[in-house]
Image (cartoon, rainbow, N blue to C red; front, side, top):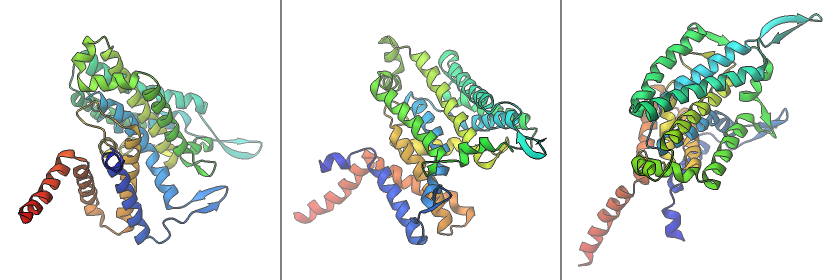
Length: 347
């Protein structure tokens, strides 16, 4: 049983998360302190969960793409596009009703949300068609949208920060349900739906088969191209949901900076969670753990007073160590280094 536990793919991500939480608690004595105020919980842990939710959403979409031996580096641009569409359609014009000033959405909020998610899904569909139908390499296909998408977001916002004043929209990123941030429930719902889809249907097996050997999967009768297109479309949709949460949280949309470098954090989260970049093997729970590690690491860096100039170096070093510990080849090499001197001494 112990051997099985030590070989579990989620062991080292879980240990890393626990260590980071412990370091936070050492440098911040009130880290675990939770306070109930205004009908919901406040505290550092709650803040980490809330801020990790958008990254977890993007990482879940990225997990399926990487499982098919692909990559999507356009998710940051898709986040910016979805946020821009929602902000433009909602806005929040100031009007006077019965002598009271109030902000009114330009379009019904449900319409704006559906439109933003539809545009995000179209971005993913574009990537999927380029990869599966046109035959482009995934990194090149998504690089096109990464560059063009950022330009589209800037065109939509006019290069300015679009502020949203419509209060109901703020619930997505700032609201609470049962004492916890609503964004956490959104991420949990997406993970739960994907988990059921991957484990209760054959889709998870199909995605693994495509990632291991796309040609063999096609010969076996799988609709490899259709599944690949659907996976990229879902990745865009997940990025769109994250864009809505982020824009709701900051009450604005910034085409220049929204989602900037988020694709890199998502790829890190997916790999930290044990998903193989070579395709086939993937873990949805591991990707969520990876997102929590990235956000907790960011909070740790700030709490211990690391200068902003080197915080990216510290993040890279921690990720490097975790990936080494996850490598079976590295662990085998370490065991070899330890056993050989001991064997020599025994003689």
